[in-house]
Figure (tube, rainbow, N blue to C red):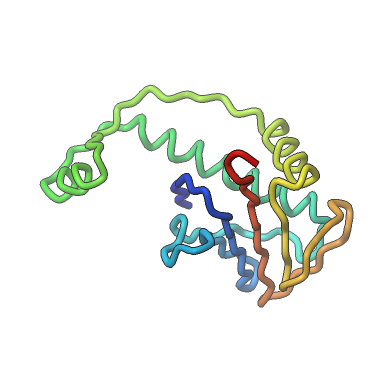
Length: 157
């Protein structure tokens, strides 16, 4: 699972499409043609859950992916010419060996995501229907799509 964070003044679209028991998650920014981050997949242990439970599963999955990337960066790697050139292209050449050990409060992250939903920082659409209640039951099928629409306030207003 790979997640690349980008800042934008436009709205953020994240689309979650379900394939069998796996959620395929991708993101778009309004007005941009390229994806916001690389598409990733998450196993879905249930076909029916409340919206809060579904959001919690997504947050837990992202935290687990972050911790895996953090552990991978502890290992020192031998870089070839292609690796070095790729690093130069993005502005950072790293061979690992970093002592990263950032602690994450999983429950706090989930509470923050749920509070942001309640405060209207983002909207959730499942199969083109807006979800407004965290306690509402959400039934997913193999063709379901979930869309996060992050709302960005205008500067100065």
